[in-house]
Length: 280
Image (tube, rainbow, N blue to C red; front, side, top):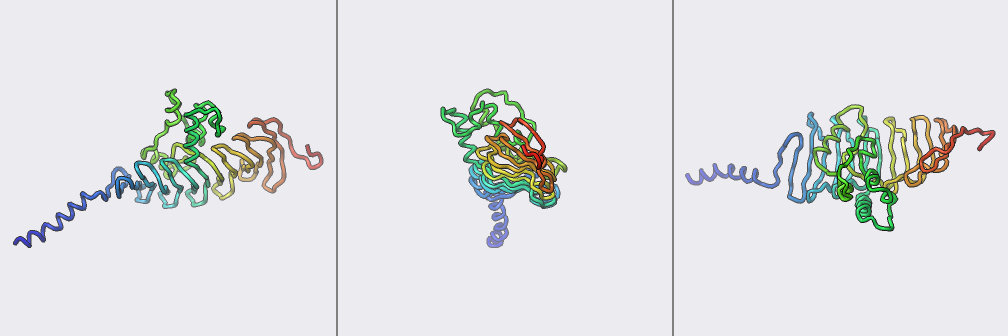
């Protein structure tokens, strides 16, 4: 009789042990959380149709590792990596039809160094951004500001609070993912509040044509860039510390030079049409 009782109780005890295990899976509000250990966790959210919405790796309570998000159709929306809550390395995005949307190079270490310089305010500054007033400088790494989204004006005047004013929480991240993947017709907004562009940058129209192409250095556009204000016409010229500088040339879809524009610190100095018989 005792053996029969043990045989009956064994499956019950095993089920209780499994339910108490730290490697437990459960669902709360649309966010599916699977914890492997205290220092290594993953978050996965799902669309209403059961397709994955986004996936991110957490280590020591910070996003550190792979990131991906998807449209309800299952087509990937964006992909990259986090390092200590900050996007780092190459990030790539796609349109709902699967065509590439952008390819960026981001740097978590550069953003950390810039923030350190903004806080310490040394006499010799390595970042041109940090030479600006801190209330203006912090905008250059805020995603909402860079993508022309409404930015709440901080009421805190302490420099440390201005520099470290952004937080990374799953609720705000999921709101942006919803906008990017569910709401039709909206522009892409990065799911993270802060970013430091440093390296190659390319964005595309939905038909695959290049929209903008160039290089960022320490958060600012530098060197030669090519920009297509429309799918047909394109402009080519140089940036200096984030501002258009020198001569910019605009061409039509056949490659014919249309006009020149001279810039200084981003301001237009002169614009004139090109004439093959009388070149300025």
